[in-house]
Image (cartoon, rainbow over all chains, first blue to last red):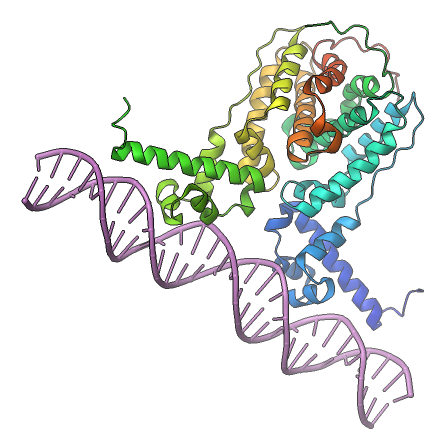
Length: 197
Length: 197
DNA sequence: CTACTGAGTCAACGCTCGTAGAATGACCGG
DNA sequence: CCGGTCATTCTACGAGCGTTGACTCAGTAG
């Protein structure tokens, strides 16, 4: 398991694989799954397309390898202060979102594999979050929170929506705080909503 | 401008174009721009692929025609009750989102044209909304609201995220109300945010 | 009745894609 | 120094794509 000799065969292989993986991640992120071609990835990595196939088996497998590198956001907070944890996590993702995560997001609407990855990641995140919310609609609340974070992250990094892309992360977080707090921390405090019908 | 004879040439043409447009919208919506093929659209519409080209010029043009049919959500509310208008609009979109709109959303991450459409629509919506918010960060607030709505709509209709897909629209709206109100209606009421730095 | 227009089909093109497999040549254990 | 292993390249195949242009045939105008 120790590092092999630098310049050795095994080392060289690892370096090349990493270069391919990097190039693939970048392309998947930039243009999505369908518009990414093995040839382009190979060329960007400075190797032949056949080598990519040789190492990763197929385009789908290569994609899998790339999105497997994405971290699943954790959130183990206790009731009453889950909101601040959520917002802190968002602040980080707004400042500099990891490429792998954004790659998944970009491809989630066209690639079933990516959609599954998003759902799986969201499920874990939601389940984790839900148990910090002591209401019977905790699951829904967590799902809504997740959807909100998705929308904001997407708008800022992928859609590059005007105002959002340029804004200070902390400012966005501050604007979202009341809503997230209402969703995560003050589940029963709903006295002011008027009744209709 | 009157309807031509039923069964006439012009009428027949209009019907065929509509059938193609419908099939295209459905396919773009279901699988996105890249995975939609002209052949499949033509086949679904019961015509030859060449005819699609003859009528619409190119795949990109066909796509343009489809997304041009999407309605741009309007929102002309006065300050102090913009939130309820926003939420009412969302409720409608949660209950049954128009296919054309979802088509754009599905393709926005892979197709520049769709991304532009989303940005353009969002810009109008945001600008419209912003003038109902009497703060200097009105644009950012409106953009955040738009992002939230995007995330929720996306999660429910396109990602079909577990809890969100099955939930009652009104319940989702109720959960989002505090946050939207805080963003749109109570711009100055921010007394409880702690100061940092 | 005739000439024309236009809806719709058909076959094929050129291209790009993912993928396969043989070939090459440097490295490394014995 | 020899034999094999393995990283890497090259060439090519087959499929599917968007797109083209020639064609057929029914409706329509004069």
